[in-house]
Image 1 (tube, one colour):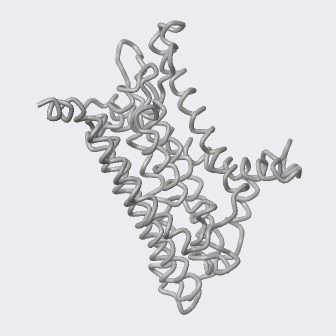
Image 2 (tube, one colour):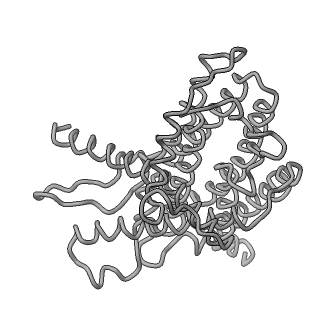
Image 3 (tube, helix red, strand yellow):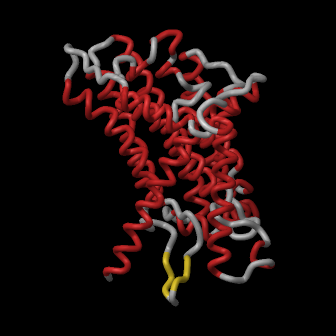
Length: 348
């Protein structure tokens, strides 16, 4: 491993981390503008031209607010909770291929921080750890509303991770790999996985809403019942970490959906018009982020369109509908892959 390679990987980590935070920061602005558009309002328009400095104003406000730690709380865990939540949110971007390789000075550089051959397992392992941040924060607050929100969050995430995992098993069966880079490579042209796994995509998308605690699945922070949910007792930037991690998770979820089902950085027929590898790499990044921004908009559109579930409805959807559907999708995928063998049995 050469020094130049280490420097390149360090630069790539900083770039991906910075872009993740920047997109999450301006997702808060986009959410307000989209909500305003859907509700026939103007939205932020005071902080800078068209309100584009509003996220900076929000960040300064969070840092400047008084830091309050309840005297009856477990202070160490109270601090660890939001730190774990935002850390796990930021760690998921390292296995996503952001574009085709770049060639600089005759050397090829990957636009993926690390190509782990078990990338899907890494992704789900890190995502599943995020619930510990919520659970620790809710329990350490020593507040019954926070604890209820934390219990809701943990049960919701566990319930929907089962269906999400089953939908991904079907995808792994069709692709034959756990590497995200190889999954993207297999989707060149029009060979997008959405065409062979439409039901799996639908299940994964619904579960992504539940995993990110987005409406209509925002029961863990249901203000009408729990005041503020698991972060009721939090203030200043600790509260900001909880709120900010939600937008990071939404960005990463959109990137994962685009990678798994919509070809990642691939775009059909682009090779006919552009032959330069670096040009293709730059266009690949643009295509991937276009897909990501579309799904971020979709997340926001759903939030401001559909009403919130009741908690019993949320659990019924997870256990009685999505899990049976994901199992059925798994069986159908296996039958489709074994269709010739099954047909041969009938012929015999």
